[in-house]
Image (tube, rainbow, N blue to C red; front, side, top):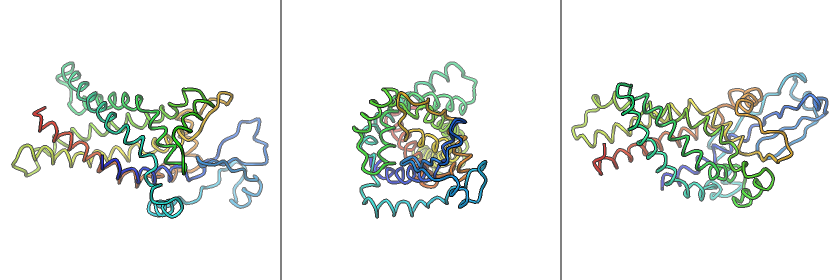
Length: 314
């Protein structure tokens, strides 16, 4: 529980970094002659005269102007504290605390059940691949079940003084109940490969390190190996899937009403971020996410291993 509270500040900073860079909203052919460009940073929409913008950016109408350089992690954190107060770093904490234990229980229980079934069905298969498949399916189930709470958390962290119940009612009223699952596709596109990389990294690292870590006590050795494996696997999985996390955050900050065009797909959003912001947009918020996720993965898997040891569960 203390880990959740500590990580919330980094999650807030990461979310703000991911929505601060402007993304060009591409217009349909029917409105391409409009004399204004519409920019959105996930929080507000800004209309800018096209000719003045092109003159300032020194690019042609067919080009997309380069976005400004994003702020650093520490600068963003300091600005949040200065403008909104220290408590703003813990925005979204209530839904996080509400779902932390249940979502973890669903995730790990599903993982263990699926892994045992796959081991029985495919006894000769590589253990790392079975762990990859089990982790992916377990994460998909947990992410789907708790998606509405994740949506509210992102809204609260991205927008200052956001009210969760008002956000809920506004989404349902304007876009229907399906809006409570906005961004679920992007969440699954991030979480499924993340879990696949994570559990494969965990199992392969544990197999490699068990014979190489010089610790005599068997139980202490297992927990220590799990801790090291968690850090390595967490860093690998976080870096590999971070562009998907950027798209997930962006997709959860737009309310689509019933009379609007369908929301852009995950691949369309990914393409828009890449074309408008390039590598900087794809890596926005990477540093606070790595700082948050890597130790969290290590603590989670080592605590899980220690609990299994305490109850003699293999």
